[in-house]
Image (tube, rainbow, N blue to C red; front, top):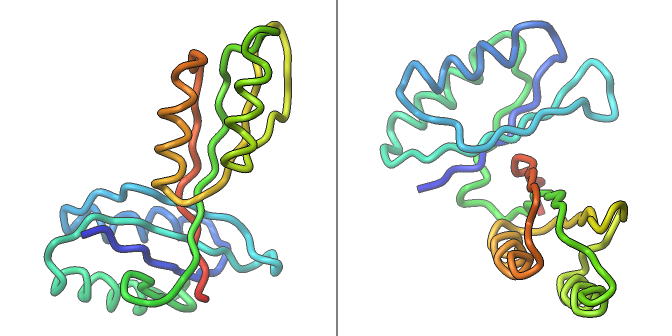
Amino acid sequence: MKHTISVLVENKFGVLARIAGLFSARGYNISSLAVAETFEQDISHMTIVVDAQDEKILEQIKKQLNRLIDVIMVVDFTKKEHSERELILSKVNYSAKNKAKLKALLDKYQAKIIQCKDETAVIEFSGEQQEIKQLVHELEQFGVKELVKTGRIAIAS
């Protein structure tokens, strides 16, 4: 089961390494990690997605996270009401003959073209993981040249 964990931490050197170390020491791979400063420069927000079948070990990790000096708060969103999003940027073929079809597809998903250059369009889209998968699948008909994706971010509802 995928668990989405939110962690507020002091924005200090080595905090990310110590937190990632807790997961790797237990043999859990972090499938998504997003970290950025909050509106306060000395505090960062981490959203960690980990696939963990053993709830007991995950509880242990959360307890150990809470014990770290630089950790301010830990919240497991897995069973709580929350909103989550990921962001993709994708380069696709863009020509006069596929322009209308691509724009119609982007309108369907509320995605947008942020740059056009040399018969290539850069697409931006943020949404839930399933929506992103569907859009990427549909973009394949245009020829996806490159795709980058952020980690998941989440906030309590």
